Length: 34
Image (cartoon, rainbow, N blue to C red):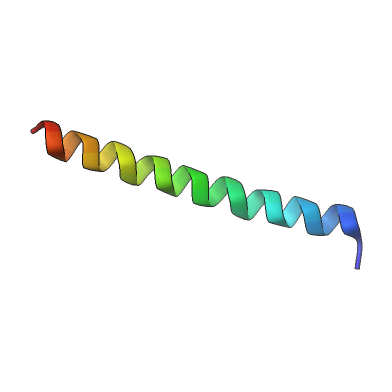
């Protein structure tokens, strides 16, 4: 298994989870504001 490919896949998953978390936080923030 290639290490660089493994790291890239891990980073992609990390970025996806971070984006989802940010989206949830902003959604909750707007709901709380309203």
